[in-house]
Length: 296
Image (cartoon, rainbow, N blue to C red; front, side, top):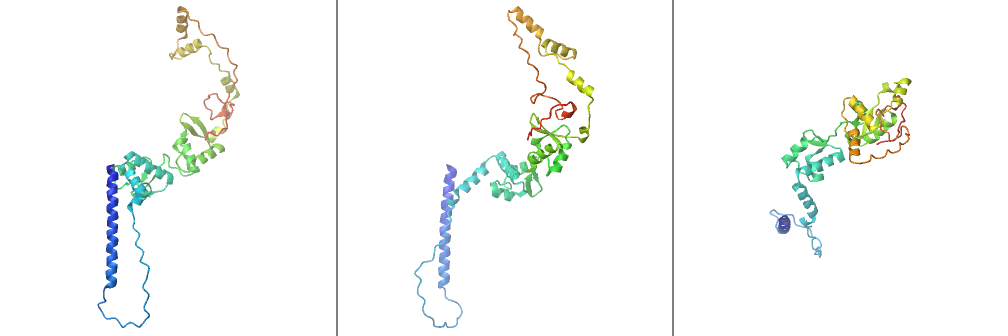
């Protein structure tokens, strides 16, 4: 309420000042036109008298400050907001425009006064998402690449995979270039814990062949199905299993509980699209099916 009352008094004072200035200007105009010249003028030639004008001069347009209420309220809201909110506003603008802007240009578009807020200015200059060259601010992506060739070079430098989210805002067409690199076989786009991960495709691996005997051994490996056998194998390898099936069954017999009946074993359908496999990005090594689904 106090702010609104202050603004109302401010606007009323400005209107009064504007009216006073208009009256002073009108008085000076009338006095200058009625003043006599200080030097002699040649005698005027006889001309027919001009008819007096019946129309009064149009009054000067008075600018009312109340017409700018919405903009003033917006400026006040932005300037009174937290430093974090103002930083987000500036970073969103830089990300959207992808242009290098001065503090004055940012102020014109967002009403954020960087020059008038030292804390905000220092925070922006030290922000990892902002680049400052001494005069202009611009958006700084996690990886500074600007095209398809640079993107491929960057992915090749990450043999363990590069999350697509880290290059999502590198430049506007980055997602299209990722799809193109995946379609051409230059990279593999596979789902990971945090989203899609891009893996480089080493051309040397395309010609690698695996012996048929090794493939046969791989497919013939059988894993134990009973919990007792699984726990036994874990103990052999030096790992302590989280379950103790023997102890649990003994407790059930003491307390009269009946073990759950064994469910009928489902017939294995082999490797499907839901099967979790390692080295899925090298399907030709072990004759695994290739999932050509576009993950992006």
